[in-house]
Length: 372
Image 1 (spheres, helix red, strand yellow):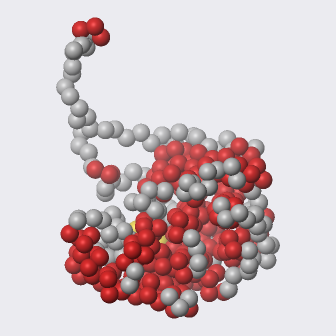
Image 2 (cartoon, helix red, strand yellow):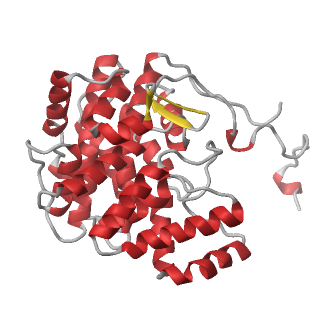
Image 3 (cartoon, helix red, strand yellow):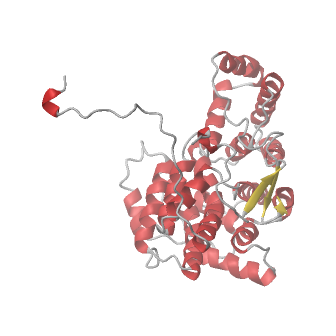
């Protein structure tokens, strides 16, 4: 047998959910640029789960169902209040809460198509409430219930901040959610599919995916990008700082991608949004620093920014805590995880690869009393 490190280039399954072909990302065949520019997140979720864009009636029904299912059992929030708040990262809280959420769903162990779709809708709706609820609880505030007249992105910001958001903020979050909704067979999606391929329950699959997304080489990169920009501080410090990372052979977060060779097609949308939002916030330096970092890394190393790089300054400009960046990623990516779990259940086969053995040759067993 031969092995490929990190399964790079290995085709592990078939899927109609999304594709990356010649550096073009599509959801169910729709170009990411069209979806980012024209679609609501609710439309994209419907598309990923159903293989088609909704008509007006379908979208209204689906959007209303999402809002109607956003409420989270009080027991989960009560348990959050007992967490060691100062030490708990929001991704760890999210992982725990989603796992716990399954305890309150009477259909949790059902894997039939109809039950799975109902569970997917409940999870998609509630994960936003969990993230915003924890963000408020750790600041000594109570979680806020969603408003029936607000869409998904607007409700997320409302439940986070306690006030109805401005249109520019809603547009930014909606676009970020659309761009992060799915990305073919990435690490967290593969984790979800491996988990449910054993016919484990939906909540286990999403919990496993959150665990994979938590790592800095996957979803955690955007938080690390903002930490880097904060350390740099000013535009005139960029070259020296980045050169120092080059000299120490350290990874520059937010650059490069395993799949894309000519750049991440999602990055340009967040770059434009970063320029707009940092300008509105009177903090253009975050965008200017980001551009300077991009120029330095691209010119010196030939690496291009990925979706994580400019999302950092977008979220920062919206006043969102830096350690909430990855949970927001999870809120979005739940749409794709759900789609892939539904697809896995519909045509399941246990995922069980092999490993190339590189340990010692056959060894002779020595009784315990004779070992030195």
